[in-house]
Length: 505
Image (cartoon, rainbow, N blue to C red; front, side, top):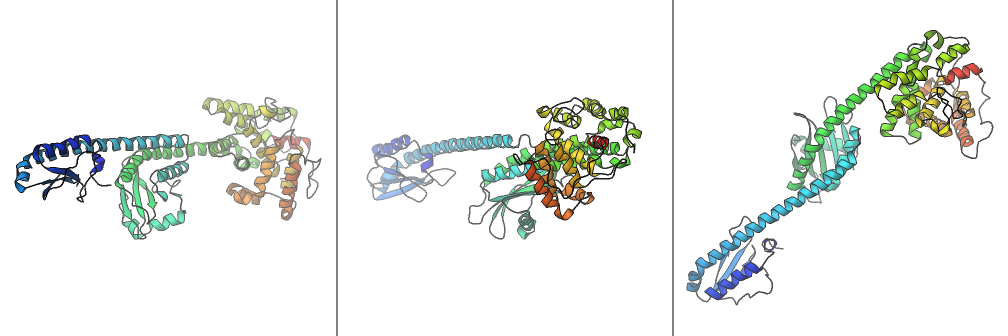
């Protein structure tokens, strides 16, 4: 494909020019490309070549060839020369107009492609509040758009630690090694550039900016056997950067506000726990148990965070319960126990003005409801109880049972799970209890549980995994029996002790 043909889509005017030179001036003329080869223009008359010839190049930005003219004598060419040059000027103008039209069309197509990409990208990142998730989607989508084989994003500086480095189609260790190469260290990552690594890979880098300063960059790679990144791809990435940098800044701000919000919730929960030395750390542990259970139930993302917040706030209402009742070592009177049972209502009154999502408030308020309707404060049954509340209920009771209280010593994990088992389908949700057992089996995979696990007591820690497996089998549909397999019969606590444990006391 020569450089002339793309601009001569309409060959009829060109053929008329060539016919004019032949019929009016006796000149045989053909269009030639930059290599001197004749450009086919359809079935129009081409004329027989003459012995005397000259080539008149087009006056065009590109080397697009020209008109090859021949005549019987040099004098004939000389006489026709002004007319030939006029025709060349006419055709050059046509080529220039065609070029401008082609460039405009190409630019519109590129803008259309970019707009289509940006709309698709916006749809895929909408709703993402996690900075790392956002960066992962950006790397994947941009890499596919520019045919990059791999990529990574790197940020540095205050407030960027949560992102730091995210890799696409390469390991983070490989990304570190690339950053340490001489070619990469010498590259000016403050602007969008294309350069080559020592192994011949092409690299396209664009900065990530926050207001008036740079916080990092994205780097895209193409294997050495492929074409290097083009100027168009460089321009495309500049457009992308101008769009994603402000979003990353916003997500960092969101991250900071969200962290402040969560830390405030934790501090408030710790203040409630501090009313009684026996419940110190209770809300923290309940939140970690709840999150571990939720992960086993495939709850992720914002839902997991909302559950954690609700778990931290589940006992806020206890701020209105007298400390002498909360910490009473002896038996509670009916009136005192009724006072304790008011704390979910007080929790609701505290949370109501904050305008939190309903599923967070319901989880915190309903965690003392029972499947059989004998719970409080509303006496809800079955599916009317929020799933988050069912999760917190199990986490709350398990921690209360396995922690020391003024009225009893801490129970073993086996005893606590046996009590939960006996409350299945009446008090506790079967799937939630199964998820807790599964989380306890996988405690080494959960950082929070790994920290809590050493504080727990066991009847026989060496046979703990066997006990959990057997208990799981009894809970599976169609496999439940009247009693689970336990290393030893669990002691049945006094009725009120069980009630206080189920109140998180």
